Image: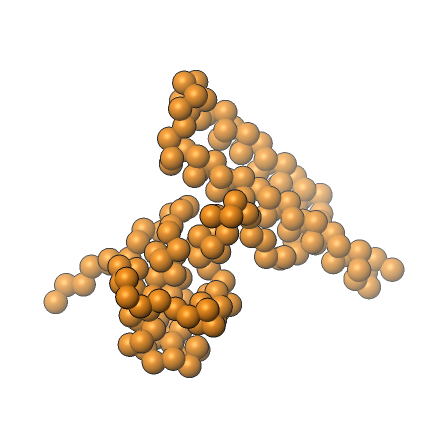
Length: 162
């Protein structure tokens, strides 16, 4: 029997249901491992994370566990996007000259990315996919800068800086 991937495409923007489905299936070991780690029945979890199932849904505690265990960026994006917010996981990056140059390069690339989107800007009509790509790029830059800030704080608070 041929099995095709029916999961939503991994991309910059997913609905919350599709992001939960993707996070559960991308979890190391898949839904089976996630169910074991959550101490839930596999069949029950499988039905709750199915993106085209309307009757079943994760309860708040289960949702919290899925978020905690998977820490999936697409799921986190889907959770905070409706509020117009950006999530940030503090992962300290060494605040070295090379790291700062890397952020500068990312900012330059983002600037070029925005500049090349002249179709939307020229006629003042932005397509949904253009806006979503722009938002995703902006969030990536923000996370990168905040990571370097966290790295600088960690270095300042560490014994190496005394």
